[in-house]
Image (tube, one colour):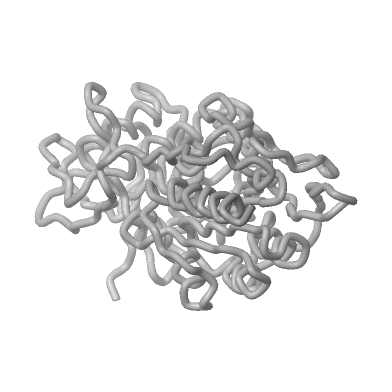
Length: 389
């Protein structure tokens, strides 16, 4: 079995040394090069042909974001960002995910060596996942970005182009813009009764954004667990809130779940839903990791099955592993309507695949069709209710 070949890009000699050591301790991967800045990295990528790179955010001569933008336009490849646990680090990391980075590692600002040692398993897991992920080519600045990425293997005309034959890595999806739901019926009281539950991991920040962007202002309340560490979800929610018709925020314990609002599990905390009289409320709690995750999709979806039952709508988006699959089956058994993102538009098809295998989903859909399909489903429900009046 060939090893995963990794190039480390970081201006800190200590971080380069630590990441090289962590990677080389794994039997299935090796660090084939370490660069102090993107210009050196560019030559390494061209000459060494790595499978994955780890990329620092702030570096001399060219920062990581500028380099990533050029890389994903001219020679797309799996990238794991290495960022600091600061507000600026969170903001820049979210920009990197928009540009096509697969995932990120949040390194501490102080005690870096010990912090990286503690994160060794997380780092190597993310490198493994990145090596299997579908990536997309970022369009040139003059082009409108496609909804789900470009179709087919990208061209590589630049000095950072891969030498030899193409690996064929791509992120195929419809090139059409996300489909806006038709407004044939107002959702009315259904928005109060229904709740949409979303679970996502690797690649999920952008997938969730695409779903939320096309939700109408009168959509049911949305509750989201996205695997993300502390310090990043507040910025993520704020970015989405500026883009969407609905309001988006980081969830707070005890707050009422309202139509036209989305609530994101805070990093490092579990999110679930409870009933309080006629209202649904968010419950944000600490606790042990579930399926190695905190927040965990399993925790959220179990509460959906238990508390919301047939008024729940479940969406399983891109991500590695099986978190939430069993609980989504419980949702379906309780009468919920559940869909999963299809393989072609996933960055990683792990969580949707496991949900499908568990018999948890009624529909498997391309990412840019999920919202319109669910809104059509809800409006058809409204239409059926009106026809019976």
